[in-house]
Length: 105
Image (cartoon, rainbow, N blue to C red; front, side, top):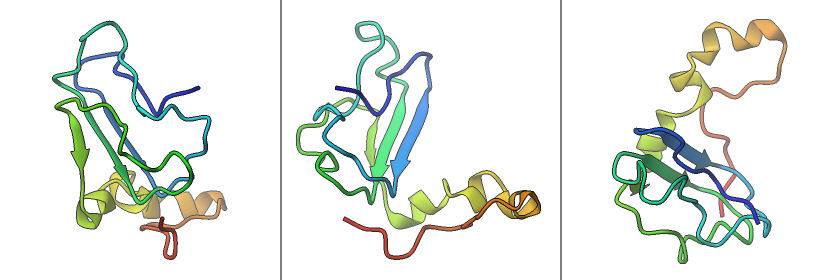
């Protein structure tokens, strides 16, 4: 089994979005690093994932786990979060600035 992430430092932030989560992912999703270290300061979210481990029913129930809206998830896209429109097209790498249409569970 593997995990979506774990807090190595205080105030860690992870979002997993528009991704296929296969059965190698542990049902609890997230793993603590060292006991309760940083569990009160992390910010973790999942949005619009699909696959056998996208179901969040058995996820850990830490205070920093968030349910987010499409508008909130949009703030983490390459176009917004990385200002990707300014530099990614110049690289020649295929690029979608926003959410990828048609990807849903």
